[in-house]
Amino acid sequence: EMQLVESGGGLVQPGRSLRLSCVASGFTFEGYAMHWVRQTPGKGLEWVAGISWNSGDLDYADSVKGRFTISRDNAKNALYLQMNSLRHEDTALYYCAKAVGIALGGALGDVWGHGTTVTVFS
Amino acid sequence: SSELTQDPAVSVALGQTATITCQGDILRTYFATWYQQKPGQAPVLLIYGTNTRPSGIPDRFSGSTSTNTASLTITGAQAEDEAVYYCSSRDFSAKFLFGGGTKLTVL
Image 1 (cartoon, rainbow over the protein chains, first blue to last red):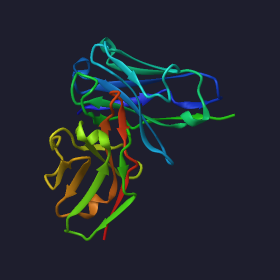
Image 2: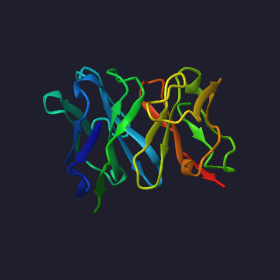
Image 3: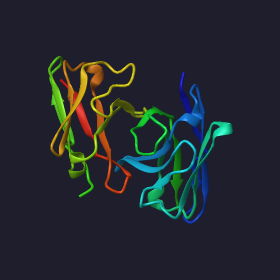
């Protein structure tokens, strides 16, 4: 069974940092692009960042560019999201999602994790 | 503009056909992707590309596009289809966009 398990969420003050992790199992992790998607009750789903199979292609939503960094370790079947300079508006449930193919531009989300919650509070 | 617009709510009688739409100029260029999300659960991929369904998705779900509008059709809606449906696509700067979601009620 293909599975993604996120961790690393928590409560953090504005301006601080947090690192999310996502561990994959049940499929050949290095064969697929991966993404982070977040969800808030008021705004629905928002794509955050994506990374191609070999980390050669990265992209970010404008709302997080320059603050967040996506990375992966294919040897560990792991995806990461380093979040710096956190803001109140980054408060959300963060999902990692598997892409359908190796490239960043293909459809995403044929496998999702359960999500990890990030709360930025003063 | 790089936005995807969905109706907030749609209702359908049990066993009838529901159509959920998604409008955006980028759909003239890129395919829409459709997801189903039930309360407390992660989204589920329903349709991507040229009306491709992942393994395990019932064939009552289908997708189509006409000019700038993508449609998700549920033929013979079931009670378990009650959920929020999101469309998604790439935008012209190769980033991903999501629509605001449509809550489907099965009467």
